[in-house]
Amino acid sequence: MNTMLTFLRKEWIEQARTSRLIILGVVLVFFGLSSPLFAKFTPQILALVPGGEQFAGLVPAPTVTDAITQYVKNINQFSLFLAILLTMGMVAQEKEKGTAAMMLVKPVSRTAFLLAKFVSLSLTFLAAMLVSGLAAYYYTVLLFSTPDLGAWLGLTVLMWVYAVVSIAITLLFSTLFRSQAAAGG
Amino acid sequence: MTAIQITDLRKTYGSINALDGLTLAVETGTVFGFLGPNGAGKSTTLRILTGLARPTSGQAQIAGVDITRRGEIARRIGYLPEEPAFYGWMNPAEFLDHVARTFGMNAAQRKVRAAELLAQVGLSDVSKRRIAGFSRGMRQRLGLAQAMINHPAVLLLDEPVSALDPVGRKEVLQAIQTMRGQTTIFMSTHILADVERVCDTVAIIDHGKLVVEAPQAELLARYTIPAYELECEPGSEAPFKAWASGLTGQPWVASVIANGGSARVIVNDLAAARSGLLPLAAASGLPLRRFEVVTPSLEDIFMRLVKAEEK
Image 1: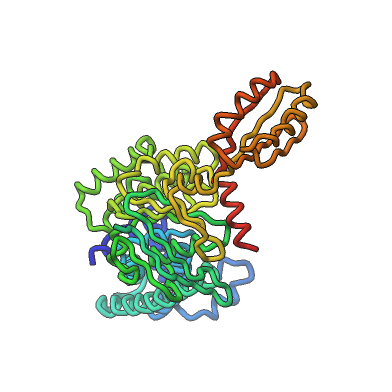
Image 2: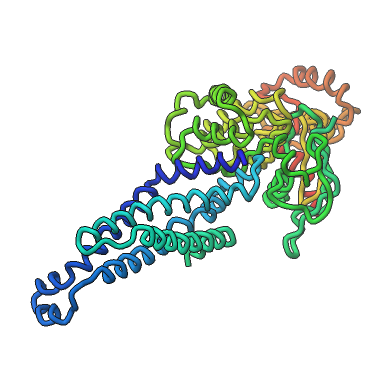
């Protein structure tokens, strides 16, 4: 348990110093904020594009459902993408570079070593997705109507579970393969 | 008490026998040089001892603990791989702190031990610099420091100086010297000069088997070539050659190989030669440039043994 905490600590600091934390936060919050915006203003945007006026009339007036659909699509897509990107090197890289060999000859269990990576990344995703969810909720309320906050959070947590599964699978492949690329693919 | 006991260790990778029944004992407190040509099985032995690889068969104990008990072994050893790798975004103090945490040391212990080791390997000045910018020699010294963090009973070093330039090599060997007496040191290498400098006991392995194991002094004595080498100043090669060839008349001379301005006199009685040869040389009146007892280097012995093994 203690070594688990040691490695969790290391993973946190690593995420912070290698700016993974920031990238994840910025990307997810951006899509959280922009999804309702795009849903709302797509007809206007189309109207501004030369030759787009004819399509603008075809697009039905955006509703709160459009905002939610946009939000779910974007966050799901990007959290999957980022889960793979941020996880694929976690073990493969340590094996390739040799840091895994350095650390695993210490009194450290393989379980603690791997679990620390999984837990740290999952919690980072949870935090980033909650912030992004609240951002999207705020703009939806501003631009459309007020959806049920509890349901909205439930939706976000479900998407988080989806991301966590992607993290777990990528981590498995990162452990099985030597190269990052194979793990990501 | 033996620090490391290896018994009939075997490791096969497919059809290749990396280790072919290696048996070896390392005394506590020695600096043990584990020699062998590339591919002899040195790294494999170290990886098995650290628990990073499993033997196909055979056994090994470190400080009396069987290597299958990984957790206990980990607390008794320090390991420096051939190419130590670090988290480049950490600085040395942070890295040592991280390693110390895995041993469950408290904050005060960690701080003291890290400072102590950084001073011992000469990295105190750069303890706040990112490891990513370190030279190979600095990495190697940091690797030594992290291996020593838990006061290990046995320090396992895999080619600690092979990839370094002369300055880096000297610094790392000095750092290893300072650890003598604190722990048993088991270092693999193929560079014999380094072994001669720091090791007191030597084992030579080849094709996964032990060729010879002995204290370094004993090994050198056992393979001593009883011979003298003489060389004359330029200009007097002809009389020198004649004089040297005449030495075969002495009862303690086995043979003489004269070659231009130098001669190798192989003797069958070192004591008699010691008292007899120098007066003869002086009496000849020839201008000598060099007069010395041939001492075999570890390299000569290594080459002879490894070649004999191949035949």
